[in-house]
Image 1 (cartoon, rainbow, N blue to C red):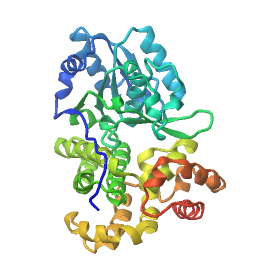
Image 2 (cartoon, one colour):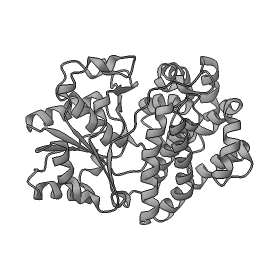
Image 3 (cartoon, rainbow, N blue to C red):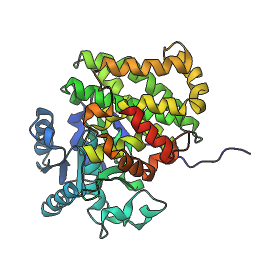
Image 4 (cartoon, helix red, strand yellow):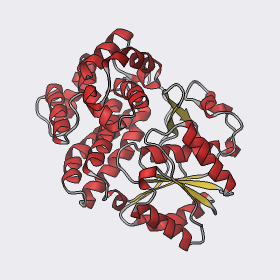
Length: 381
């Protein structure tokens, strides 16, 4: 029986150093005349944000800014952003920053013309069809880190401030109209953010490559994404001004997000609840969880990593790759376990229950159960 699948690939990307200068042209292409730039609190007063606003202002597009986005954005951030968007009469969003700024910015545009609560559009079945597509404002995405790949995604992760559960909100029109990927914007990232976001991209590629679902294009993209991270993250970490390494990491981040259309798995099923409950950095949490998940999935994925390891420059097939992951984490001073990140063992039961509800759970090569997830969390502590 021949394979059958539904595939979708990303949007127009303006890639290269200095291309932030094309922001006004991107607004024209997206049909935006009064944009709201949405970013996180940490970027609010940074030079890259000021520069972007200056470019918009000089083109007669104003200086609309909402910069009250938390590291794990919630519906409270979304409500505040929508208030600014509506009161300013804006007609489009520039989602600017790392995963939090990109995700929240996309949601401000998505919810701008909706009458239902955001939770009604969770990525469950066909819930996305509940949205009024005419009420979705155009989106331009400008990543300033190289990790989540949210700039080429059709969804956002929003934390429920009451339940502390992360929810994936999906709609095809959440895919940005134009992406500006300018590696110069990532030069100022601190080393620990360079590492954490880069390992997020790596986790996306590893999980997509491990996913049991049929998607050979994503499989190839995931493999090349892993290679780019392995070869370039150490360079970007040691020399933040290495534009070639920074550019390759931006490519790897976008590739990881494209590849995980094939599926994610236990790494993300674990890291989503950990981040929601303990407010940990997502990419760093992924890195901490990866070794235990590789061990769980070994019977199902060893053969494909045996074939891939040589291309990745790693000897010893899957076992060599598994050993490499430990050394790779150590080279970036990644915490040795979830406990070192503030996660407490008394919450493992809650985390397991939340992980079982996470959409990533269904994409793992080995079926996830209460028993093996409990063992995973205990091993990752």
